[in-house]
Length: 349
Image (cartoon, rainbow, N blue to C red; front, side, top):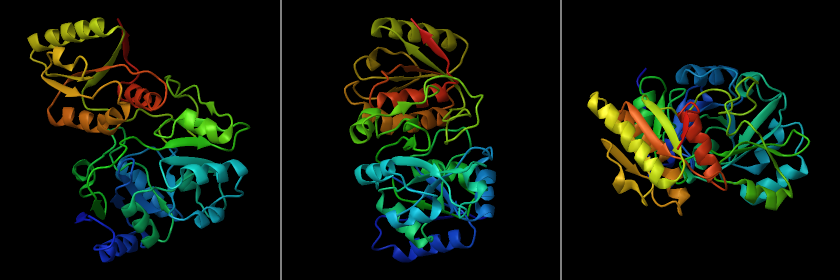
């Protein structure tokens, strides 16, 4: 398959190109496109064959649900059995934006899209190119992240092309993304709204709107024995080719431990990398040091995390180390992704 790459700088001058992309979706093809979170791999959410193609292109387990992307609130009702009050509250507060809601699905949505579940994950992205593309595609685009399953999600078209060239029909190059981490996922089918995947929309923000919200206890653990109700819950995700270890403890001890480990690998001729905060990054002696910014600016780190992991792959880094982050606010999402990328390998010093 020949994958066509189109450059879209704004939705006005490229309306015809986006319509071409939408027509590919309507015909059952696949198109990668930018959102404000990460790049998505889109297919027709209401076409079971399209969803199968998404799983095949990614090498993704078919019980890992896809997120249905819509561009208009009016498109919500046809794909769910009911719209609870909490869903309307969240839509008013955070849509369009990086929030996914899980609701009981209607018969319009095939089980291939939902991973065999009676529920459907839905979000309305705020990225203008994503919105125009979804509208051109008919209003319902199923889209996981546009990477091979298990690899770090792409935040630039470069890495979409690296993973998907020859596997899908088209890639929309719309520059880098704003947030860099996948959307927050909230399950509204349980007795109490529950966060299944943390993201830019934090627990504190959700609580202000809903009054209370529960957090799935597997977010920061390694429990993968249950069927995933949302993307990213069960399988190893976001992983670079090399081995990643998270190191937690006092800053001076973390630096000392990481430098001792990188020295051991250096003597063996093995390349090392470190993701560190600007407060201590100059102290690291690895082959590649990625500066995540200050601990006071976790949003900057979130935006760069997947790019750092991809760059380590480009640099053939065999062993990587990352400082631990707190689990409040967006730090919860950062740690969730780091733990998944590291296979929950954590060293406390």
